[in-house]
Amino acid sequence: MEPTAVGANRTGATLAPRQVEQMLEAVSELSPLIPINMLPLDMERQAYINEAESVGSIPQPQNKRAQQSAVMSLFLDKLGERIAFERTGTRLYDALITKYLALANVENAAAGQGAEEGSRPYDVATLRQIREQELNHFLLLSKCVQKLGGDPTAQTPCADVTATASIGLMQVVTDPRTTLAQCLNTVLTAELTDNAGWEMLGELATQAGQPEMAEQFTAALETEAEHLITIRNWLQSLLAGAAGSVAV
Amino acid sequence: MTIDLLRDRGTPISQQRLNWRDMVGKPISKLDDDAFTRVRIILMNGVELDSLRTKQVALRMNRDARVKLSELMRVEQHQATTINWLLGADHSPIETTIGYEQTAIEVTASVAQLEPDPYLAQGYRFALLEDFDHLYRYSALLDRLEGKDANNITQGYTDIVPGRPTLVHHRAPEHELLKPYERDAKLATKLHALTLTGGEYQTHDYYMNIGPIFADPLARQLYAEIASVESQHITHYGSMLNPEESVLEKLLLTEACEVWNYAGCVAQESNPRVKRIWERFLDFELGHFQLALQLFKDTERRDAEEVLGDGKLPKFIQFKSQREFVKQTVEREVALRKDATEFVDEQSEGASSLEYRKAVNAHGSPSTTVSETYSWTPGTELMRAAS
Image 1 (cartoon, each protein chain N blue to C red):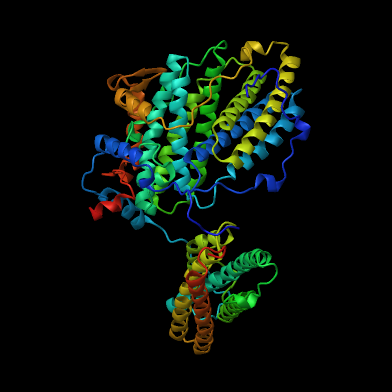
Image 2 (cartoon, rainbow over the protein chains, first blue to last red; image 1 turned 90 degrees about the vertical axis):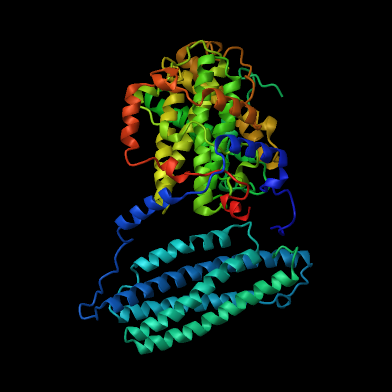
């Protein structure tokens, strides 16, 4: 584990001015600058979009008497999305806890066992609590889907799409080289999305005639709002006060 | 250190053990390591995978050698893993692709200058101009799809401009072949052809695996198009290999090829941790070579000198920017085409290639569409908006 520091980063063009000059000479000779035209590229993409099929279908409710309407189908699809998000979110916090504990071990060893967890803005208990709340949200959503005659184990189209969007989040948090601050920054993305997601799900519940669920989702949103504040404050405090440390 | 293939013993195969932690070590830094460290990693992964491929074929064709081949393959599998896993997860698939094309360009350009057979040297220069063009097309995709500058990967060593346009790489199969080297060819000639064949194989296989992971239809099209060309390149280089060599002769050459390439990496590696891996694997390969040598002698009752000459290694691939050589080759040979096994001017290209090309490009050329009006600009073409 290493702090992020100034070093031999080789990616910038200004590091090799002579080489870049030669590259630009080659460009002016073999692919000189002309106005950028991406129309052919856009047209080909649009042709594919026009001909595309959907990523898949919303599962049929198992209960034949279950209410079936476009609004209810959409509601089930979005419930599936939040199920997927909360389930992956639980695993994201598992990974964040592992990262935190590794960092704490390094810091404690460096401080000769002197460092208290309380000296950090938040401790592992905070992360474990958030993780439990994410898990509870997943379980709550699963029950809601069952109540509506759906199957919480199915992967709905929105669940699939949101899982695709989340791939990068897990890649960052599970990379041994990333710092706690880099991971918190990534989890912040997840929490911002999660907050907006719960808010919209509450509205959809009302629209679908499920006021009790709408109430439960409002409560979940309040918990998620606390997660967001915790993660953002933690990140802010690291950026403000721990530059140069292994956490940043 | 001067290596003598026929005398150096290396690490005995019984002592060649790698555990999962050895295989899954720390990756290189995409940001801080020199681009040529990544080039060597990609090259050696290709060499290892081709060595495995050769042995799998040999296994199907030689009853007596089965156990020994199996032992060798187990170690080679773990060596390939150790090497390939050195690439960090922060390389997006297109960024890794840029690394693959840079490897193809810089390694082929060096080999083209080292090759003693003028006809085969022409063969290297020919395909070099095609991989050179692939780098430009993929750089356009990286910029326009991910908003990234390919030079973050290539680090100023390699020009990012068109070569022989990819849309004309599509040739009929009969025009893809080259005349093979003869059995008495110099060792350098044999090792060059093996190295490049392995490199093209891994590039082709990589594109075939990652092509479908893209959502963007243009990216999917571009990988489909260039994977097809890389498949042609496998044939192009693979047909340089002498078809009369026996299976065990090929095994011997494969092991010599690995020794030669690892020794070249040891001599030029800038990352000390990666250098230790090259040193360790060089010793492994010397051990493999001895085993292959024994199999060859016992089975074929021939002198290894017939295949290898005096056992001295040829001059190593030079891991450095080949900008000037590539530039001159573009100027002189970009218009060359193929007719059967000959290199000809544009007007004399084999007619069946024109027909084939018309068919595959019937609905346009992905490489052309994706790079329409693209000029490499430091910091991506979006920087042009600032000027």
